[in-house]
Every structure is written in structure tokens, then in C-alpha cells.
Image (tube, rainbow, N blue to C red; front, side, top):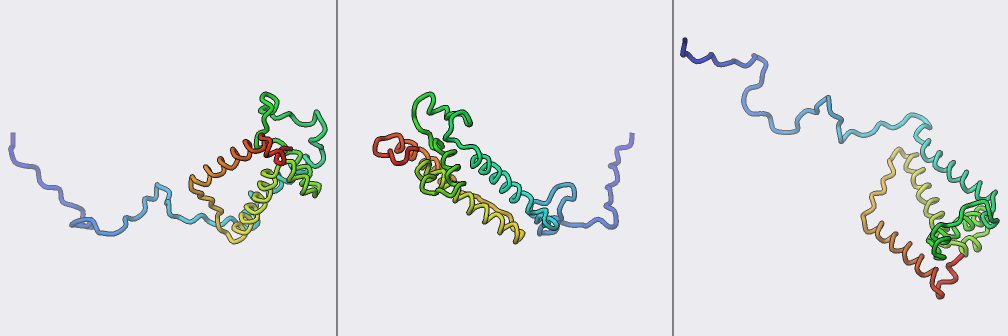
Length: 172
């Protein structure tokens, strides 16, 4: 047996020698680049999501405008109201949408003021979405958790107050 050590492997002539260069590494072609910008969608295709959303909302409002929720048998009764007799934050929302679709804003506010606020907020956010889409910018709504907790608190307070005698004006 020969006890001589193996010869040292020599690097190929084009291999870099010394420590790795400082600075960013070249991107791995097998992994997606997290910093890559999305390519803008060609033509009018980028408006498909806002247009589809508006079409769905207009269709829903059109149906509620055509089929009166005040007449029994067209829509199911709120399960919370049926079981407990308490009004949830959505109770009166269909009657409110019906009045809103017919342009009777005072009745819409009387049926469910919170729902009317939601209709207006939806219109504002949809308009912002459309403008951002036209400018080829994404709509990002990165709201902090306090906004969600605040929305929940408003819904809870609305529910409690409209079920009390002092909040009878908020009941449908």
C-alpha cells in the first residue's frame, strides 16, 4: 500500500480564486424574483376585475330594486332576529338597498344607516381602484389591525344601540 497523499485538486483555469466578491449575488434563475415588478396587462384587460366587481354589485342592486324585500316570501328572515328577536347590524339592509336603488335616501338611512355608509364606502373604494388601475398601479389596502378592531367595535355598538329603547331611530 502506498501511503502517499492524494494530489491536491486544482481549480479550473476560469474559476475565481480568493474570497467571494462582496455585494449582491446574482439572482437564481430557478426562483422567482420577489422584487420584480409585475408587467402591466395589455390593453383593457387590466380593467376586468373592477368591471366585473361593478357588474356583480349592479346586478345585485338591480335584483333587490326589482324584488321588494318588504313583501314577505321573497327573502329569508334574519336568523338572529328569528331566534332571538334582536336586530343584527345587517337587519334592514335589503330594504335599505331597495330604497337606495330607487333614490329614496331618507328611507334608506332609516332602514339601515350603516348599510348606506357601506354603499358610499364601496363607491369610494371602487373609484379609487379604477383610478389606480387606469394609472397601472395596484390597489393596496394594508390597513393596520386597529382598523379592523375599530370596524368590529362600530358594528357591535350599532347592534347594541339599535336594540335599546334610546336607539329606536336606528331600528328598521
